Image (tube, rainbow, N blue to C red; front, side, top):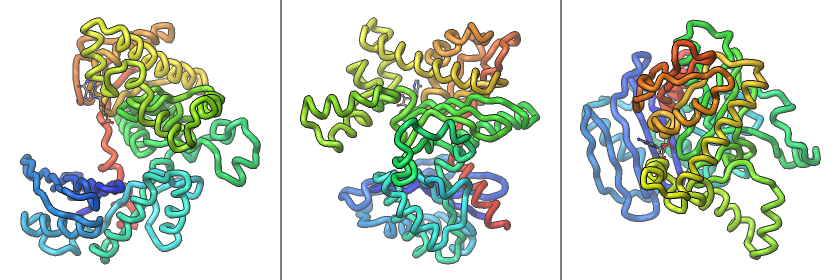
Length: 393
Ligand code: AMP
């Protein structure tokens, strides 16, 4: 059976088509610049990458272009072979604690939640509507980035703010990257051969978050109402004193939109290194002795270690710390810096084992009190698995 996993942005559409339950990727790709001119798409098929220019005014045209590619390349003979389409949705609020089949009510809730994710949820709604038009016989499912975090206890998701802000405006911690945290914690439990585990899952990419997962359920996570909270990221500041915002708005006459742009797009590694949001560039700067890059990396690592320590105490122990996403999977030096700072908890790195990029592996020493693993994440596969389960129901 074929299952399509899609991630619609405002001007983009990423997809992967799987043969399930074998979990084999048949074709994958990305449509870019949809509706903004000069659109194009890239496709990966049989180990080959193809790039094509094609004017696309909307997501429906992108799905139609995908159908043409599927037929021309003999990936499918008939569209009916695609039994399910799983859509990645950034914000599910407190309505959704699991993947669901999309009906009118679900669609209107996703739309309503655009208030909390103005950049992402409207794009997802556009993508869903287009997919329904082009693939009317497939089961459409919504897979939420926030769903995995819905098991957090109230004391961890509430802010110490007027209760009215929570009841009337839905201000609370929702978290993000939930599909990734779920995937790597499930995989970790598989490797450990048990489910009664305490895990700290570190999804560290351009966006970054850490979760505490007990017996497969999330109990805390570092992102908040929005993905801005928690760790220092490529361009996001992470946790700051909230009073900085009104203070700077008064000083500079910035609008809410302008200051939101600064804390999300002009802060983090980029602001401190004064060089780049990309940890590869920051690492290059460190090797050149650039003081700003050295400081940026110290702050970045410090914050990650703080969260690991916090969740260790909260869970009263930890069986494994897992690193994933761009930095977590690939940055040998960042993993080393983090693990070395956890020495007080009895965590010990195996330097030779840590010398890897993008592979699943144990990287802590045999006598480490907490096992440390690299597990490459696979959000698209998680979406396809959840969708398959609903198709089979
Ligand atoms: P993601 O958001 O998960 O795609 O992660 C993207 C980020 O991963 C980039 O901005 C880089 O900071 C980081 N990254 C990717 N490859 C490497 C590498 N080889 N070494 C260090 N950082 C890397």
